[in-house]
Length: 415
Image 1 (cartoon, rainbow, N blue to C red):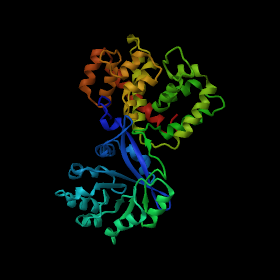
Image 2: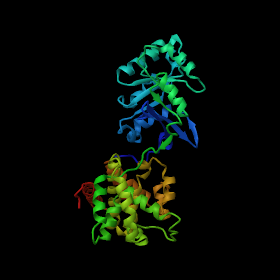
Image 3: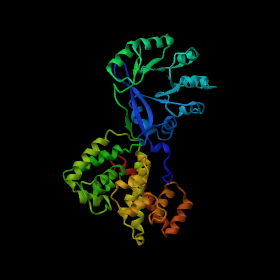
Image 4: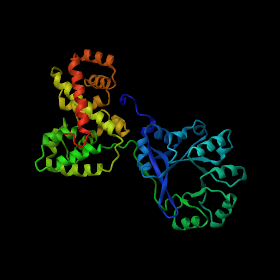
């Protein structure tokens, strides 16, 4: 189970820019990746490997399409074998040719290549001392900025006979593209094709089975609104977007949202149905990578709701506790600090305080209890139940019921 008390790493706080690379027929070959932070391009080598190793789904959108990913590695990252955090069938390990002269680098690059990784060279000079690297390389970056065709052709004579593909960067117009193609370049990158765009790390997705089930219900001739509300609030992705939608200035709500049922009453069924059609149809094309987190968040929401119902002497609102559990993993799903996420949610301040883990928040012990039970930390769970004066049998029963409920929701015909 995810440990939602673990702070986000630096890698989850950055955005990944991708510069497309094209073949000579202008078909997409892959992307070069680099890091963007605060509007300034920053060193990306370590971030790329950390993202690939610990948050693989950040690159899944690219990888599932079959394209390559090219990124730069420095000396220590090569020596530490950090390239192995990336999938060999997709990754291109790029190094500056000067790096090849460092001890052990040639041997490591040769091993990486034998293990299926493509090797790319940047900073190409054509000097004879790098002939072995040029023969090893699968891709060689050719400097073409400010050069005439004759200059580029002369430079390339130094690597005649190698099997590497040539990559031209900063190809800004059709004339440069034609010139590079005529001298033997087969890979192209630059503004002539497309400016870099940005992808989001940890994009939150929704479970397809739940999408299909929910879409079916909203299209019913006479839908059960209470039943729909229960289904919606079991899904963190849809619930989060619904509340941020209601939080927009266009609605100008004067009151805080306490539950999904409350949100539906404020918005009205006709408007909600039109909005949800767009959301659900869009989600059909999304990945199922976040299915486990979505199921856990649904389970946690139902667990806290049942605990509140079974121990009503606390005076907690069961529906509010359901929202608390449902949203408690959003920082992990979105790769965004919870302090930023709650600014989009029109929920009560004490719920926001619980989500951001304010130390004296009255809901914090219940969130810790949920985590203890999920992780089978029974000694900690028993201590927390004693502290909250909760009945252990009822808590375990609530947990088992929540697990069964969430399992049913994540099946196509779970009704």
